[in-house]
Length: 263
Image (cartoon, rainbow, N blue to C red; front, side, top):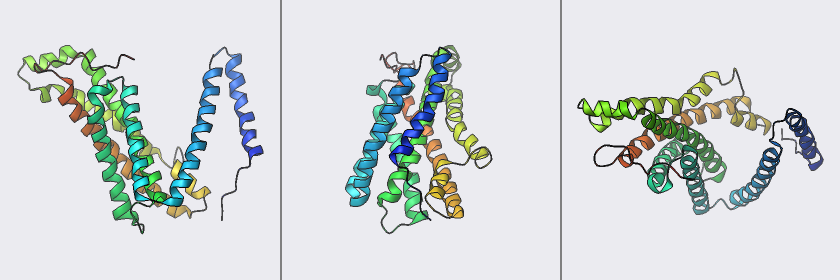
């Protein structure tokens, strides 16, 4: 069984389909025409370039090139996390990078080396898509965790200061905010696991089935990747928040004023 290819006339038909909601939004006066157009063009161009590069990467299957690509993905994820969370790169870049690097490395290495066991651990067929899926979920969880933590601290700073005045250490005073942030960060993953198969068929499993894989093999891979995603998102959120706490306060345990990104 092989996947049916999509020819260019069929791809153009999909653009015709997109015109339906596009026109409906315009009739309602929702001014998203330019944003939708830019989004579609960027998606097509970016995925096209990535497709060319990944074919090159898969053909060479060089461990150094594979590692460099993962490193670039980590840098891009780091910058995106801090931008979306509204935090300054100069303050949190290193701590966020360390958190996502260690968590993604742990889960990806565990899955590939101990569970899947391909002939080469650096095999691009496994390393690049699996690391990408794990990293993508870590990105979303870290955005939620950091944004929730620092937003709560700023809006409820009096509560934090009250804990300090009552004799709590900095770690004890931020504990309620830390618990809320970690819970918010991992909740989407937990909810996704709880409804997977009932509410939706997950992307990796669907992709493998469309690619001709046995459904049971696809199910086992999906379970494996979801367990790794949960492990990575939880570890990355915990580690990132813990590391950021050491950077976010001054010598007097007050929240620093230069944490937010001005742009």
